Image (cartoon, rainbow, N blue to C red; front, side, top):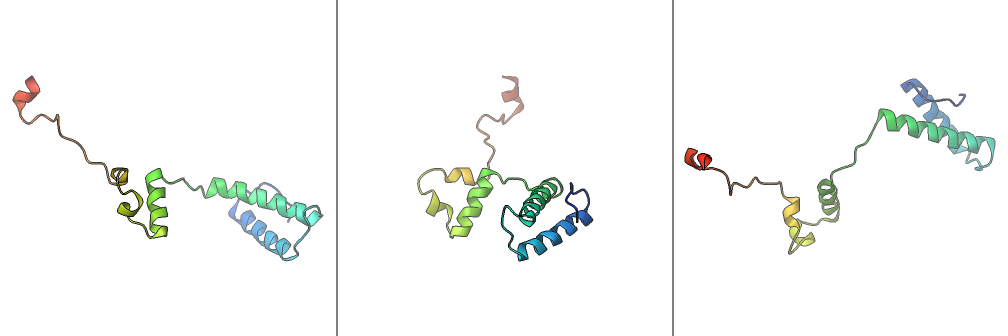
Length: 105
């Protein structure tokens, strides 16, 4: 396979197969095979970034995921403050009008 910009799933699969073959030979970085391996890895990465984008999680989701991995609960991780940020936001109704008269004022 001649290295070129990957535009189709078929080219992507061919590039993955070629990388597998090259990696089995464990080429030196400055050899022809090593440079081809590096080029194909770059082309595959570019294709995957476009076709299979991965969005970053929200900060709260990232913290919850890490806490789950570590087996922590909110009370373990944030004992005195901050745990309110990991709970879903609740609307506040302090200044919410309770009658039509309140709206007129």
